[in-house]
Image (cartoon, rainbow, N blue to C red):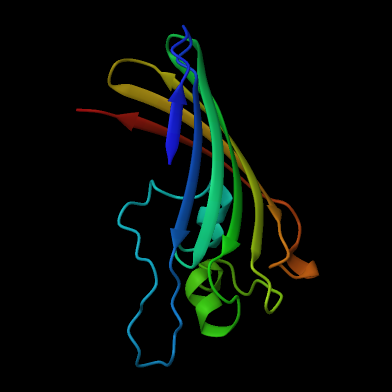
Amino acid sequence: MGEYRLLDDKNTKLGMNYTYLSGDNAEGPESAFNGWDPLFEDQSPGEVINILFNNTNMQYWKASVSTMPREDVTVGVDYIYARLAQDGTGAALASTLTSAANFGNIATVAGEKEIGHEIDLCGIYDYTEDVQLKLTGGWLIPGNLFADANDNVGYSIRGGVSVGF
């Protein structure tokens, strides 16, 4: 991960990130889980990818830029390219997808690894020193991993409030 701050009046930042999260071979029902087990949920690849996938058995590249057009407003954009780290079939894929529990079956193509391309936009408003309002939108353009029945663009729009004590 790397970040470059332009040191301008708008606090502009450019960032690049590569992350490899190991997968689980899932040799049998008795075997221990050997995939990546994320400790912090805020360290995720992208908005939509985080909804569809567990943070395991994937690698992703992320480019980001953010700036402050006003003193109390920050806007940013992230571009994410994601792939499975290991084979995208059977139990290894089942441990990667959260869809089995959340959305029913998502049809995938055996042997494919490309999850897709995601673009996330966010806006943060510092209402006060202790209160922040955030609006985030993400769009996932599916890759070859998804079968034709599931290759529509996925999106998420989320708002939140953070209060510090």
